[in-house]
Image (cartoon, rainbow, N blue to C red; front, side):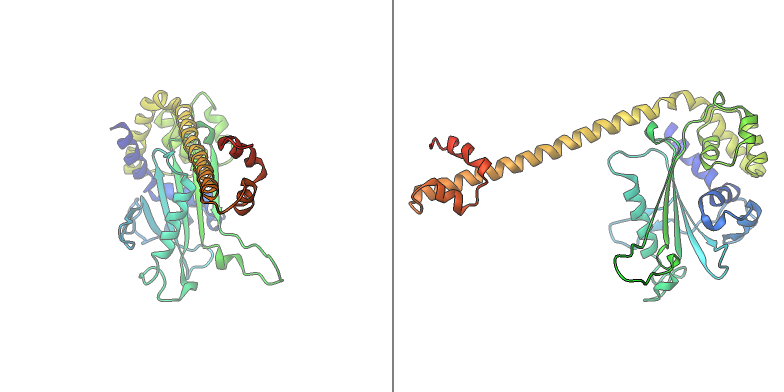
Length: 330
């Protein structure tokens, strides 16, 4: 129940336009030069409501491979008003150690590109130049402590192998996936004054909203005076609930990162052991097959001595003494 509430509440807060505008301002190169008031009207479809009107989050275009995106909406391109950017936000409550998150992020990004073909928002037939740019932001709130405050980006790059011609990066740089790992922030770490005097920091903002033990009044003060986020009545209520819940869960989650790191280490160790075991098993199996083939050649009378068998089967020199011992031959 605790995890479910946390995940649900975090998605509600991320759906507010004011919060999204702050994210876009710091995470998208296209929005860095804009104020929050300039970014909000670019969120499509435009409305006076404080929440984003998300596109259909259910992707059923691939049979047997259903995806439900947390938040999906269109942003009018700040630099090219006649173009749009597809924005995908994923609030990753708890990172799985069964797979690497970048691979899932790249898969989702690929699906968001492929799903545009013959779609009203995308491109028709082979008009590939009309593909919308995709910006996918993954906010992972609970993770191994070693990932605290890491911000990673994955893009397509062009590598010139030969010749002089190159494409404009806008041609192939249509997809950018970012993974953000905000850390737990305690009110003991920094004073209000230190925070207000420091530069804007996306990790600090996410920590304040989701992973802080500060009182709501303090967070509200920082959001308004440093990040220019003026919360409406509905937004204040949701953020206050998040803060109240965060204070109660703060101590319980404080050691979560260390625990998660240990779990990841154990899982990787087991996985490595299985791989090593399979590798050794394959080697042993190949060795037994080799011994059987040499025995067959000797018993069939096809060859006169074992050196001929070594030559025919291309047996490595380092294996030959071991096989001679196994067959009790000098």
